Picture 1 (tube, rainbow, N blue to C red):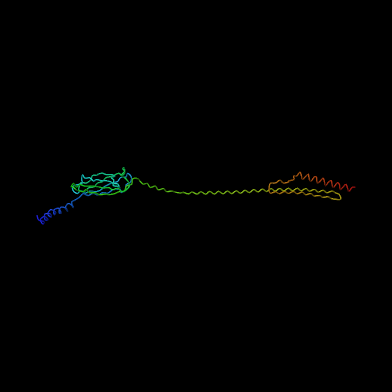
Picture 2: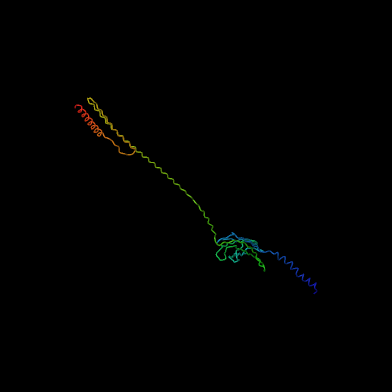
Length: 240
């Protein structure tokens, strides 16, 4: 066989393959979506994985989605499969997980992967989708302490004023007057007057000299006796 003949035969074999290849590339494939709620999980919190699927052929009824949860290091923390709800070419799925309970649950960002495939042909690749959430093993409690300072000021003012005035005035006045007058019918007349005055004044409590009526009488009598004796003496002298 000549070289041109061989070339024509090779092109004849390759041409059908080139026509078949675009048809294979554009064949329908399965699809899946995934989302996680909430996107932040703490301790033994619960989170939900949900999404939608589309079958490349046939119905989604009786099919399932495989869900895996991997920690920041890539280690598997949880796996499960969930059935798809629907009867046509599309459907939905949802599944709940509880975090914690194993050594794989460490703090960080976890990745959720959903895998779905209905195409049973050889070499078919299942559809996948991923979503992430953050995890914290312990609950962080923030305590706010508010300090209230109350100042109480008590002022006690006590003023005691005591004024005591004691005025004692004692005035004692004692006046004693003794008057004696004697007249004799003789050549001479003798008149003798005696006045005794005693006054005591004190601004404090003192004892004052007070002459009683008896003392005045006795004094007057003695004075009268003296006067009589003198008169008698004078009369006697003249008779001699």
